[in-house]
Structure formats: C-alpha cells, structure tokens
Image 1 (cartoon, rainbow, N blue to C red):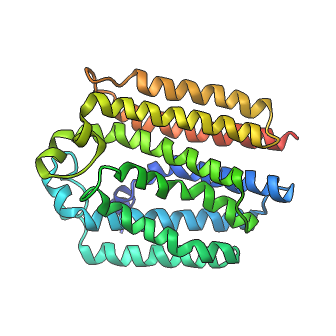
Image 2: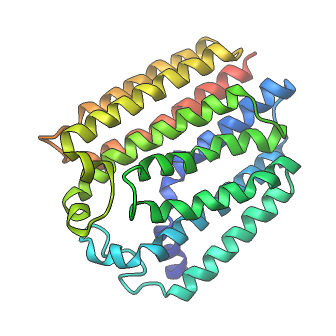
Length: 288
C-alpha cells in the first residue's frame, strides 16, 4: 500500500506543490486583508488547501492519462507511472474522480463565486493537456491554469474579484509560462519529431529563451504593480528584490550553449521564488 501511495505521489509530482500553493495562500491572505482588512480564518485556509490538493491532483492525473502514449515515446518521461506499468489506467481514473470530488467539496464550503467559477477551473485543468497537440501557446494555457491558484485563493476568502486580483493572476500566468518554456527546451527535438507544439519547437532554442525572459520581465512588472496597488510596504519590497534576483539567476544559469542546469532553473529557483514572495507578503501584512 505504501509503495502504491509513493507511486501516486510521484505521479502528481507532490514536490511541485511548492510552485502554486504559496501563491494560493498569498492570494487568500492578501485578498482578505485588502477586502476585509483581516486575515482569513483557519477554516478558510483549510478549504483553500483542500481545493488546491484536489485541483492539482486531478490535473496531474488527467495529464498522465491523456499523455501516456506521448510519455512512453519520450526517453525523459518513459518511466512515468502509466507508461512504465506501475499504475493502471483505471486506478488513475478513480484517483482523478476522487480529486475532483475533493475540489467540488472544498469549493462548496467557501462561497457562491467559488462555485460559479469552478466550471472554468475544471475546463482549464482538462484543456491544458491537449494544447501541445494544436498550439505553441500551450505554455500560456498552463500559466492561465496555474494562475488560478492565487486568483482562486483570493475569491475563496472574499467572494469578489478586483484589479489587484487580476494583476496577481496575470503575473503568475507569465511567471509560469516563462519557466515552462525553459523546461520545454529539454524536449525540443522530441517535440519537433513528433509534431508536437511548443514555443521551443516553433521558434528554436535561442528565441525561446528570449521569450521566456520577456515573460519574466512582465512578471517583475506585475509584482511591482501589486506593491503600488496595495498597502504593502518595504517588507514586500525587500522580498521583490530577492525575487528579481532569482528571476535573473534562473536565466543566467541557462543558455543556448549550456542547458545542463534546466532542472535547477525549473524546480529549485521557482520553488524558492514562490516561497519568498509568499513569506515576505505574509510578514508585511502581519507587522501592520
């Protein structure tokens, strides 16, 4: 049983929760302070956490089912659970259904707007896995999906959306799209050979890294805009300086001539970035 649990956790890349979950909490806490001038309750945080677990688990399970044939052909992904025979399709389907039930249950315990927006979230979770088959904008679609984490956190505790929430959403969209382009550079030759769509397969390595840098410039502007649009102060600003350093370093260690540190740029740097942004936002709001 424990082996099976470990395989499921590996399938959904539980460690990658560090990308989106801190931003979901940031959206919840910042939204509650902006709209309600108070921190969200522990119950609200719990439901946000459960909704994130459900959404993320469903998304990864669906992706592994939909992409199993492609994963089996790609040397980088051939040992994923389904193509490697570690999990059966039926097992993953049940896992996805349970994950969606968890998402629906958590959302129903939040507010009306959370439930009204739930179909959009489900649609985006399903859509992303198909986009590489027909558009190189798949990275943007992934960003639009992961960006729902902070936006969903905001809506979950406020029942509203405003321009600050939208700016936060757009910021995370381009942050995600930028690092996903860097990650997709690993599969450039495979994607071209299989006729799959991505920015690297469409524009080549050099231009793709330039596009990723441009997307992260938008991210940097978005974080600055949030500072200007809210009562956040120098603690958040200090965190932004660290964040900008992480974004710069991420692109410094990856170049068309040296792609050996893609995993560091993808996982380590981006996990650190999300934790830094959340932590400094929390400190800033807590000391007011």
